[in-house]
Length: 207
Image 1 (tube, helix red, strand yellow):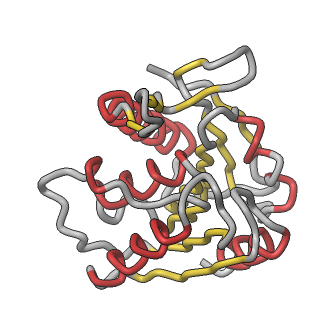
Image 2: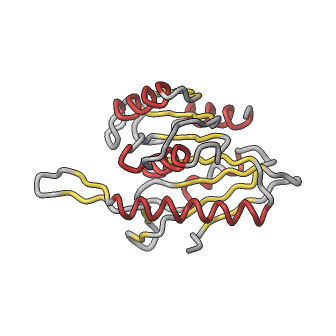
Image 3: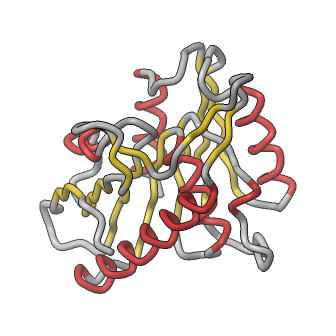
């Protein structure tokens, strides 16, 4: 299944690409707003989640609440989305002759980006994980964590959607596996602050 996506071509011939994965209730247009501020030598693809919430809001998997307001993620849908994203990236990689791949995800998109990178070691050169965490239920049993992938992780200390400590615990886990993780925290909520954006652009420019 081909995912809907937006595309910005590089200004020069390039084999570098950045794949954007939005959060729950957003769309491909959300992170694509960053494209004009990102390095011009990148192919930039912004994917749209396959599950429609409204005409302009999409998700990668459903989030359910029980009568006590406990939250449950639809892990089957999440795993299906992981497979779709991987297949679409592989197709674009062949079509555009890409050799250097970076994935950037926000919130639900961050959760999937981390799972993709760990389930497929060395597939990505880098991961930019924004306001999310590592959901270990999405990891394959065969995950070895032997990867050269670099990780940029950031979170707002005032985030009321995804707890700050979830992200911090994820960073500790990644570092315990010997992975290269750059951690950034900001006095902000569930968003990408100006300082956060400056730092992630600097990270991408210096890969």
